[in-house]
Length: 194
Image (tube, rainbow, N blue to C red; front, side, top):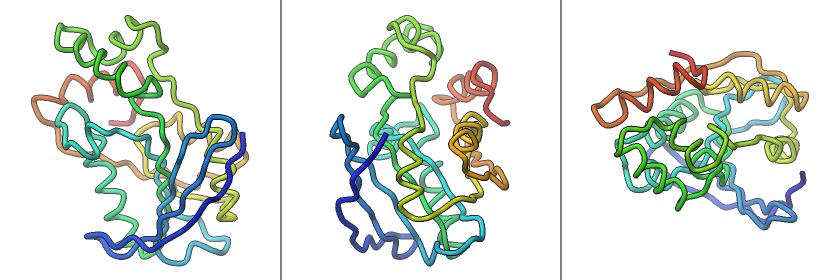
């Protein structure tokens, strides 16, 4: 899988000034971004978050998931460390897309958990893939990273792409009545770290 680097620009945020980098996935035309903070060059491991797009959580502040708070926590951690990288991948709803995610929400409203809902719609529990990370990380000449995640599958995927994951940095957020079952399902059925 390959991407074309398109452009970079300053991105001032509440956590300081990041740089936003745009990439286009060749073949599909999907657009992905990377956010960098500070100087990420050199051989020292880079603090990194691989975040899958979640319009409902990241932009609409849904309490059904922990995506928005995880993205915020990752940006805050990177700024506190003074250097880091966030890859923001366009694979909404664990890779099933926004409209199917809304269908999955409707099934969850009727009692299904997040895994059951995806399966009832004819999808795998998690359709995301991480091959796109390789050309993006290669663009920044990164080979070693500290990965901010609760999902060991991401670390395995990066290691299978020949990146060294020196440490997993968990990103736990607040549990609320709307995401309690969602988080329990991630721990119980998808192997996420508690």
